[in-house]
Structure formats: C-alpha cells, structure tokens
Image: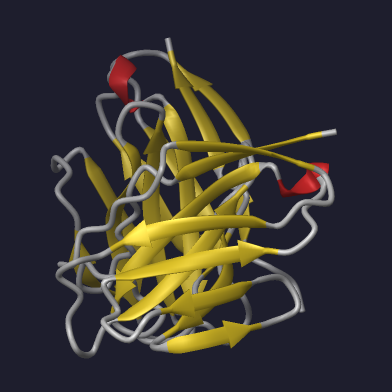
Length: 114
Length: 112
C-alpha cells in the first residue's frame, strides 16, 4: 500500500486559498489519489479524486505533478465552515488502498480563523 | 435520495455487555463497510459486506462481528465490551468496488 504523509495541522483565514500537500513516494501505476473531508462527529465525505495533472470540481482542485509522488489539494477562498480534517488516500479507484477497505492516515486538521 | 442511516446515534454501555449497531445503506448499494474511529488510532477498517457475504476484514478481534441482510442493511455486533471499544463507529455504503463510498453520521459508543 502506498503510504501517505501530510501535515498534522494547518491554520488559515477566511477568504484565503489553502493548499494541503500529501506525499506518496511509492504510489503504484494504477493508484488514484483521493481526498476526503471530515467534520467532527460525522463520517468522511469524498471531495475529489485524480490520477495525474489537474482535476477541478465545484469544491476544490487537485494538482498532481508528473512523477505523481505528491499531490496538492487546493481549497479556494476558504470559510469558517471549511474547518475540518482532510485525508489523502492513495490506492485503487475510489478505494484508497487496503483491499476493499479505505485506509485513512491521521489527516490534516485545517483550522480557519475569521 | 436518502443517505446512509446509522442507528442509534449515541449509545452508552457497560463493560462486559454486548451491543448491536445498525446501518441502512443508500438504496441500490450492495456494499456496506464498517469503520472504528478513535482519537488514538484514527479511522480503522473493520469489515465489508457485499451481497450478504463478508468480503474483507480488518485487523480486529473476533468480538467484532457483522452481518448483512438481503435488503443490504447491515448490523455490527461487539461482544464483551471493553473500555477501549469506546469510539465513533461509521458505516459506508457503495454500489461495488471502485465506486464512491458514502458514509453515515456514525454511532457514538461509550463504554463505562
């Protein structure tokens, strides 16, 4: 399984763009990169998924360099409600590794201040 | 379309008791997975059921078990509860492998 490394915590302010980087040096050829968001006492929610280059949806952008050994989740103009834990998963499409089970690391606790 | 529903939302049990948690997946989804989340260990995969069969299992003791019914609803059971079983138990449903997983809001279990 590709192991991921991401910062334990980050702080930012409302209206700013936030970039969270995830390292995955031993990513396999058929692995995808998936990001989840989790609010306290709720289940994780899928944000975005990509394989290479750039992916954008209504919530975020995902930048993946050519070597795919890292990826960056970009949240444009964050608000207080973006305060959450963000998880980077690497593995088969939508699966994030661990056979059929999603393998979550510690995640990045993002705190947005006014 | 209704989301994943977990019941109950909160539960308090005494050491040594057993507990059963329920998960109703999104209509049409055949796979239900269960996860345990604690501050120390984070989110850990317990097991997955697909079409009433356990398809995969995480590294948890045999006190943790589950089952899935023909309507895809799933239950997990924890016997002989220990203090360390206090956690948020989450279930996720998806149509099959390689499709997006949707999580419920979880059941907060407190063992005293």
